[in-house]
Image (cartoon, rainbow, N blue to C red; front, side, top):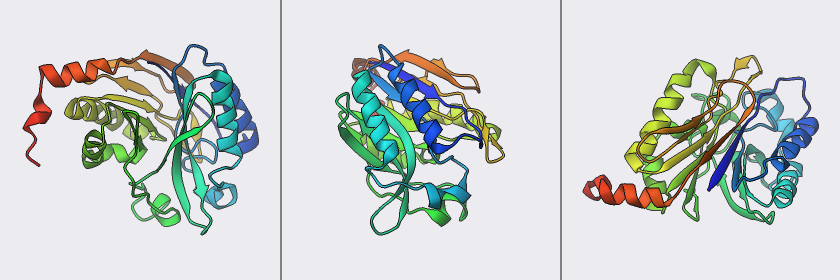
Length: 253
């Protein structure tokens, strides 16, 4: 499977409509990809808390529709990153959608671990509760990376690769790389993690989107600006890794 991670960089002067059009065009340009991955909260802005209420969208809103069309035109799966969702009850979620090559919505994940220590996400959003695995692809979002118990649940749900959208800031980027490798090693799975570049809402973003194999080897890694990272992953490697080094069979908890 060839994965393309589109590490977006954006500032505060780009409208959601212009960014949506730009990103859809970038997705359509990823010829040869089997899976395209986008960052967390790129439509509304990962740290643009003051804009979320006004820019939140329903599950079938303009952003999801634009990315469904782009996936269909490209003929590849797209993890559309995440966006601020508002449900019929008015609650907001940090929601990711996995889209099929035909434009169908394959899976939806609402971020379980909300970052902000009582401010930002926890104050404005409702946490999700469902662990989501689709056809051996587990889905997580950003701050989830710090909670290994979620990854164990994804493992138990059949995940052999973890696909993650993120808006991880530059000042903690060393943790990003360390934790991505740790989750890959301890669960013997691929970690495909797409971060945000640039700076918005006064926060320098960390970039360094990364693909890690089940042995913890970094297969590809971005810098800190806007770029596309390409890597090939072979899920047969997961089974071989777990067979030749059967550490997971020794779990007691």
